[in-house]
Length: 253
Image (cartoon, rainbow, N blue to C red; front, side, top):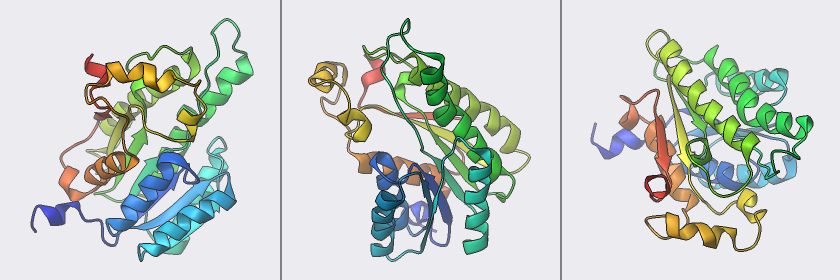
């Protein structure tokens, strides 16, 4: 097998959560282009249909299911649907996430819990459901954030705490499952990419962060999808328990 062939995912089945918008769309499209079939989960069914169309346009099979990762039963149902449709789950892209920017003294318990419920608890329920059916050689990629490693001038205690938790969870699942089950578990920590989440930031905020980014620009979602394809493919077969930072150099400044 050539080096380039190591990056192919032909015949693999990939679950992507949060697949209705933003980075989830790029992940789905990127994995389809790498040869995988897709199972998509998201709350917004109409927008998820657009993502499914991109997968189909790449010549791959796709199955969609409305999924709220806050509910462990819905996470299990998404995995069950993947098994019923394709008979296997090879890769999980744990991408569903929400963000807020609320000053700590004003953030309510409900607001804090809502973020942690999706970003951390939901990622765990999905990993748990996939871990029950995945075979050796499978891979879980949790989508964390640079805000789990550093700060960026906004009041984001809930979001930062949830993403730091994802990084810790990644390490623990890797040490539980990589040797015993043959399931590699890694995380991606994206910096600033243009998505619906960044569209909600105050005007001028992203420009204020550019001086911290060594490469001097925002990320292209295709660059993050390509990193995920590498991690999930045989090319990344000796990597587990790691958090790969994709941030243009923000966290080294």
